[in-house]
Length: 376
Image 1 (spheres, helix red, strand yellow):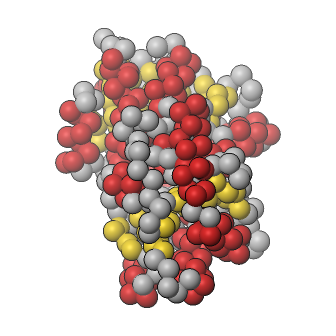
Image 2: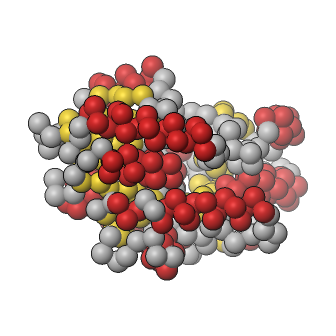
C-alpha cells in the first residue's frame, strides 16, 4: 500500500478542510498520515475514525524563531523518514517550507504544496513598518528556496499565482489553480432562507485583518439607523494568538452594548448559518478562497465581501452579493442597507450563491483535480 503524508500546522484545519480529501485518498487505496502539532482528543479521534493515522509534529503556528524552526525541520525529517511516504502534501507557510525541505532530504519521490492564501504579508499597507518589511523578505526567501522542490504547487486564486510567478518562486508549469478547498454541497444545504429577523453573520478568526472592526462599526451604524427594526448581527470565532487579534474584553463590550451575539468558536457553523440571512466577510487579509464564504454560499446565503484576492472570485457583484473595497465602512453599510430595504433580494441572491457553489466549488471536484495532478 502506498502512503501519503499531509502536513499541516493546525490540526483543526485537517478536520475542517481536508477530511474529504483524506477519505478520497483512502478510497483510492492509500494510507494517509495526517501530521500536525496541536492534536486534541476530538480531532485525533475524528481523523482516526475516517481511516487516517494521526502523527504529532513539533511546529509553532505563528512567529519566527530560528531555533524552534530548525527544530521543526529536523523533527519533520525524522518523522518523514520513519513514515517513508510516496507522496507528501503540505499547506500553510511553515508546513510548505519545512515540509518540502524535509521531504526532499528524506528522499520522498513526489512532493506537493498548497499556497492557501498569503495573509497580510503581501498586502500593501499605508504605513510599512520595519517588521512588515523584514517578515515579507524572510517569507520571500523561504518560498524562493523551497517551492522549486515541489513537483506542483496548488493555488486557490489567480492573484497568488501571478504574484509568485512574477517573483520567480514558481513557473507556469509548476502552478495549478484550484477552486479553493471546496465545500460539501450535500451537508451544507438548506431549503430555509432566513429573512425574519434579518441577520448578518461573520465567521472568522477574530483578527483585525478579517474586517471585524468594520463589521462592528457597521452594526453600530445600522442599529442607530433602524432603532425599531429587529436586525441581528452574529460574530462567530475566537480570539487568536496572532498579535493583531481582537481582545476578549472588546468583544464583551460589543455584546454588552447589544451590537452582536458572540457564541465564540464553534466546531460546526451549519446551525448558525441556518439562522443567517446574509453572510459578511469584510476581510483585507489575502485569503486563498475563504471556506466560510463557500459554506454560506452552499447554504444559499448572499455574500458581502471585499474586492480582495481569494474573496472576489466568490461574488458576482449584484448577482449573488456585493463586493466592497476593504476598510470601507460606508460601502459595507450601504450593502447591508440594500438587503434591509429590499429583503426579497436575500432569497434571489442566495439561490444564485448556491448555483455558483454547485458549479464551481464542489469539494469532490476539487479533490479529484488534486488527485489527477498527483496521478492518483
